[in-house]
Length: 93
Image (cartoon, one colour):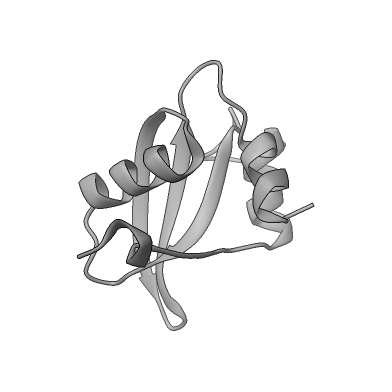
């Protein structure tokens, strides 16, 4: 699978915006996360590599889930990198 085929598009909802800026929630209190719809065949290692290469950041963790509209990946960025900055680059804001 080509790296360019892994990340399909950012997934933007009020909930996903709260993940970026750290609005307190039960599971995701620390923020600095961004959500993407990804290729259904991509595993966490593929998603991490593709995201790091495309946006020149370091990834601390990836959580995935399958929904009706595709596979979603919540990507937590490492300390010193900003999900809001990546969101701005992909046109979320």
